[in-house]
Length: 88
Image (tube, rainbow, N blue to C red; front, side, top):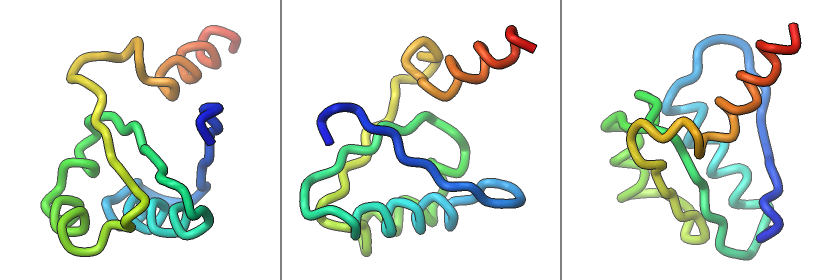
């Protein structure tokens, strides 16, 4: 998956650390290769529950890398939202 493929999940409600960790668990189970997740600094990524999950039960093939603070130019979701906003 070094091609930069993009996987997503749809849900109803507010994003939470539980939804995030469940996504990583489910997606990581699909593949036997190392997967690097590039994540922004959203508050649910930084919660104690995520830190504990990373220590205790994160899949072995999952690596989480945080974007630098205030680096919106590197965040693909923000770029997409900006494009959609200006097309409307």
